[in-house]
Structures are given as structure tokens and as C-alpha cells.
Amino acid sequence: MQTTLAQFSETASTDAFSLQNHKLLKVSLAGRTVQAKLGSMVAYQGDVTFEHAGSGGMGRLVKKALTGEGQSLMKASGSGELFLADQAQDIHLLRLEGDAITVNGPNLLAFEAGIDWDIQRIKGASGMLGGGLFNTALQGTGWVAVLSDGPPVLLDVGGAPTYADAQAAITWSSGVTTSLKTDVKLFKSLTGRSSGETVQMAFGGEGWVLVQPSEGRVGREPDSGSGSNSGLGSLLGN
Image 1: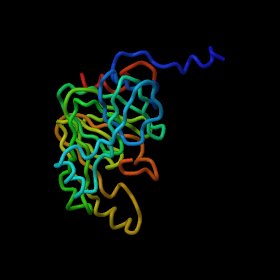
Image 2: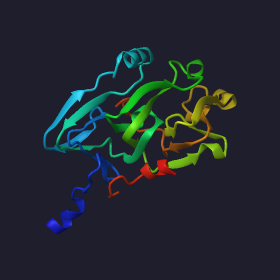
Image 3: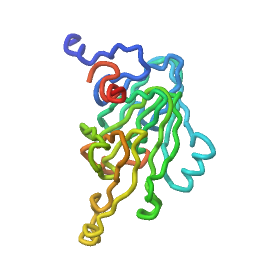
Image 4: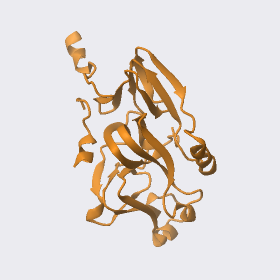
């Protein structure tokens, strides 16, 4: 039996974030503090302390109150090992080196304490959607773990006009500009029906956008691979 179970042994890594497998993130705290989606802890070993992360400052508190958007985060610190997951979705690691990305709120799993975050509105959203459309902007140095509902595709925004469903676009680079595009003809033909194709996110500028093959898990709350650092971290260095 031990031989059979050996395939599930913990991954060995000295990095803060490593993938236990493509659906489970291993965080080695070792005196570090990380912020993670509230409720994403599935297991831990050693001395780990949890606390609610709050709004992260008065400015973000006001934005969250006005928009109804923002992350429900928890802080984890200590000297143990923490395992995070969310509804068995795929997990991808991104390494920031003083740069910035924007993440669709439900797709943000965790990030290191050296990374700052804020709530950001999509250009033109308030005029087209009631309450607007908001995402989480991250900037700094450290690891970020993002979620996707299935294997994503990386699109080069500078290569061609690029559009995606607002719930399918999970993260994009700092050189990318965003706005909203409405298909008026489709909107009229689908009156009384629900369709993500009536309003799309338009991406411009230079950089990349990561798109999942899904509009998100049904019934999810809005905030609700072997080998360490595999996944998308290497893409940021290219």
C-alpha cells in the first residue's frame, strides 16, 4: 500500500509557492505571511495562524462599499505548510518581479505579502452595466496563484484585436488596456435571455490575456502537475 500511496507524497520545494498538483497549492510559510481567498484552506501542518485580512485599507474599504466588489481574503502566517484549493479548479503560478497584473476576482487564489492589491474598474463599465465591472489589480514582487475552470489559453493581445467574455478572462498583463464592447443586434435578439456574448471585454495595447474555457462555476460566490513553480510562471519571463 505504501508503494501505491507514494505517488501522492508532498512535493519538495524551497519556494514559498509550489504546486502539489494542478489543483492543489502548497505554501511553505517559514515565517512568511500570505493572503489567500477566504475558505480556500484544505489542510495544514505545523504552526499556522489565520486571521481575516479585512479590506486592506480605507481606500479599498470605500471602493468595496461603493461597488460591492472586492476580495474576501484571509491572512496566514507561521512556520508550517499550508495547502490551498478552490472547488478543484486548476491552479497556475505567476511570478511578479516589480510588475503588475489584473485578475478577475473569483480567479485569485493567493499571493505573497510583498504584493499590493487594489480594486480596479473596467473602462466604460459603469455606463453599460449596472454597478460596473471590477477586478483586482496586483503589483509588487512575489508569487501569485490564480485559478481557472479548465485548461486556459494565453492570447497575445498585440497580435490582433482581442475580445473575451468578462467571466472567462481570468488575468492579463500590465500593458493591456480594457474596455467593454456591446453587440446591440445580439442584445435585441436575446431580450429576456442570458448570454455572455452580448457584452464582451475588449483588450488593447501590448501584452497577454489568459482565458479559461468557462464563464465560471455555477453557484459560486463572487468572492467566494508535479514540480514546484510549474505552470505559467515562466511565461512572464518571456
